[in-house]
Amino acid sequence: MEKAVPPTQPPPEPAQIAAAPEAPVAAEAPKAAETAPGTDVAAAPEAAHAVPETTAGTPETAGTADTAGTAGTPAAPGAPPEAPGPGAPGGTAGRRHPRGRTTLILAAAALLGVVAGVATGYTVQAGRKPTPLAPLSQDALAYPDKPLPADAVEPVPAEHDRRVKTDGDLRDLLVRKPEGAQEVTERIAPDGWMTPYGHSGEGHEFEKILERDLRRIAVTAWEDGDRFVVVRLVQYQQIQERSARAFVDNEHFYLTREGYADYDGRAIEGSADGRYYAFDEPVPPGELGPYRYLARAVASQGDVAMDIWITGSSRISEKEIRKVAERQWGRL
Image (cartoon, rainbow, N blue to C red; front, side, top):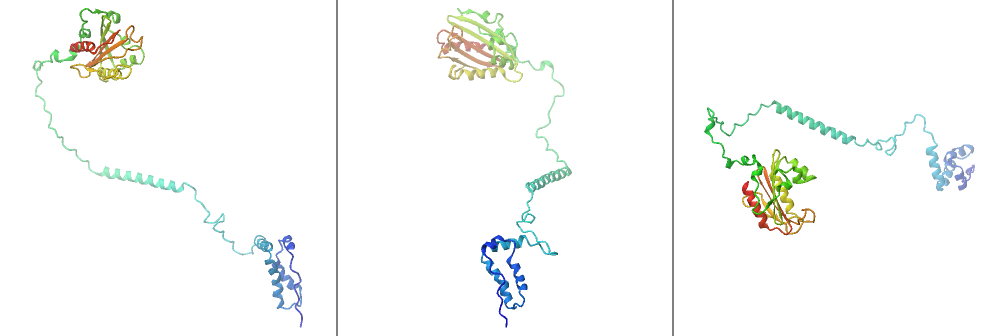
């Protein structure tokens, strides 16, 4: 009876395993069995498994063998190709759709829906019969069989027609100077008609008065002691707006502010928008020439605006400006 032959190769050292990673030990086990003739069959399995047991005990050898066996071993001819995994580049799970495609599809579907709805509604409406309009609630207009004669209707009397007064010579409507006062109208306007520049001066106010369709300005002025009085009647064409009323409203806005009269003024009796103001504080030097105190009165009647200025060296009372304003308003 023959004795069992030990393995022909001793267990490899760790250094030798690290130096030869490409030679898998498991593949050499059959060669050892072939080179030992006469070896008992029962001992062959032990020889075949001796080296793998030693190799499996070393971590470096196990990792090297797995890597070499996976990467270096070619695929068997005729074997089907392996399917890529879920995380592989060619896998189905890793494939991404382009961004915005879903949004574009939804937007296109919404647009098509709106167009289809409009077209359907228009088609349905076009196919319906027109709805007749409701009958008029008022009776038919009645006309005389024959026109009335020219003398059948009396014309409006002059006292009831404001335009009869204002369409004439506007200077005739100016208030007369009081007794003892000296008329100085020629200093402002020799013929009693003031130019737009003389009324408003240059700048923004000059442009504004022209934009309001100014027609003409009648003026009178007198001196009474240290009082200098100027009365203007400003007439507008009033094509685009009620310019006379707009002028008065603009003056009221400024006169009630701080730095001017700084109060709401007093109403002129009998007028709808007329008010008069007496300044308590003197104006800055030079604004009124030699005078420092001011009183104003403004009102409108139709297309004519009344604008009164009284200046003086001392404070002007409300009674003084009220008398002049009421006299002028009575002539309008």
